[in-house]
Length: 144
Image (cartoon, rainbow, N blue to C red):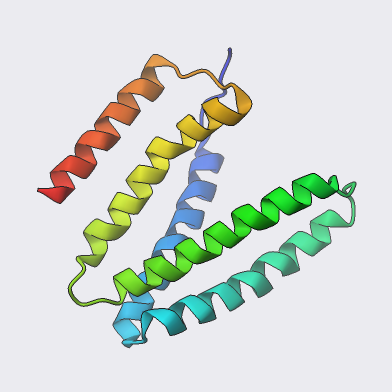
């Protein structure tokens, strides 16, 4: 299976997306807002920002099957709950915010190829396996 390489443009897109994901939790803690309020406001902002852009694109796309809509809504609910719990943790002064967020990102790196393999039958290359091992090692280092 020929896997395309990440281009500089894709790396810039990924960096911008990652920066947006990382920014809200740090800003919420900086402002001293409770986790519940941070989650509520960020989720509302995400809804407005995401739906505004997506609605423009969906006008040119065929509607997905009902089962796809239901499954994606359930997954979206899980994502919303994850944002809520992340906000609760990063606003807690007893939680090391940077290590916690980095751990979330690293576990996402580990779970993404696992999910892709399980759902899409993607193959894991040697680079993927090495990345998984290094990601797990990084979490263990952060935890020590």
